[in-house]
Image 1: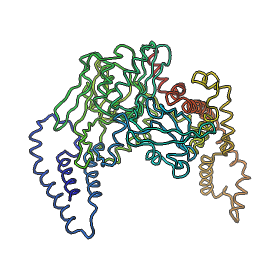
Image 2 (image 1 turned 180 degrees about the horizontal axis):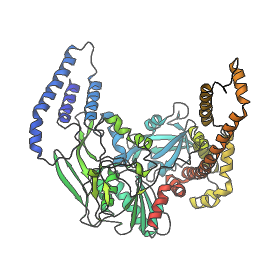
Image 3 (image 1 turned 135 degrees about the vertical axis):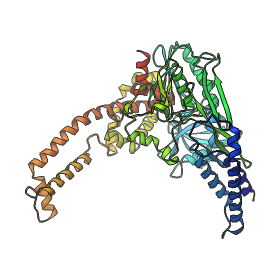
Image 4 (image 1 turned 30 degrees about the vertical axis):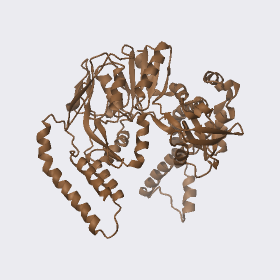
Length: 588
């Protein structure tokens, strides 16, 4: 009965919220609340009676725990795509990336050939203190084998994470020697600034992956570090950043604005308008600024980019952002579970609500990015059509749009030309990652790879591209492969023509004879050869770009495996079309 009571309390709380409200409302809140009271009471009675009937008369003993979760999930799904229920068992995991820490040993890992390999050692974490290193392979945990088919992400999380103060013993393989480490679990920071460095003598780069509790302090440290190195211009990378806390977004936007500027405001049915104004704490108020976004930049990322666009403080570069303009508030339930309920919309300084429509349901909503790709929006900026009703003006009078994400000032198309069949084949078989892991492990500790600068100076001497090509050949992946898709389509067209042309059609007693005659048809075979020659011209450029991209991918992944995630971005910056476009803006 406790489960039923919990469910009904949660239902009562959620049922009071309006379903699928899409229009801005500036009307008084009280009349609406009173008008909905009778509907709310009726819904409460129906739910109460239904669960009572199930409890008293259902043919089997009902699982009310499962029913309650299913019911709450379904109700919140009817409201909007971002109101969610988090069961008590998942609360800690759901919140840890935003809280900025977890309890464990303090490593990031990857599973390579059924073995746990340390991908990074978190600065300030327990593993760093005892001397665990990037590239170490964990072979035993507390004396038990940690290799084989049973090793997956869940296995690693279950065995390495745990309460602060508990101890775990890891046996790791390093340079053909097994070393034992006794690690006392502790609070481990989750950093949201993935990388920051100087691109040139005056231009800095910061990549932020989420808006977590520690993000503002991390940003201050990164900006101050770059300022000391002479930064006058900044590329702030929010691509792939799905958001986080609104107050952290405010604090970060505040770093780039003078005092007294509206950063964002939020407003909802039961929440009056609340303005967030900039202060005097700006750490980078004067320098030139570019913000990089893409289709995965959402929520808090859109607050920051939209604010800086509205005040003409930054040039926004990339592709149209996700379009999440709803604000969620966390409500704990009595059993420890939580409801993240949408309580307001947020608006940029110009008055834009950038929430994209969700009136066609959650499934359509979350497939919007696929629709954008199919419509050509990822490649052609003129594929985006915004109605005049969504026009707004920036501080200088430029036109910007609401209603579906932040549209960049400078468009950067999604580059698919560098993904050749060869590269896709390599990636699908995991050969790129496997090779880079093995290469890093085999060369770790060499004098010419002692640090990143040495790595960059000596990389080309190691002929990595040639070594990789030989490795790929040994795995039966060749650069020269017969790709028959277009040939099949061409042959199909020719068959159709022959079926329609009874005069010139091939006549044969059986299929083998038919194929033999078809192969002797010089005109037919020449038409296929001509098709191949035209296709080759197009593919030559794709292959050239793909080989260049593969060169940098190998180099960046090896650097990451040797020195950490930051060095991946330091290498890949030369292949980053978004970054190139940003530098073009800054160096106009």
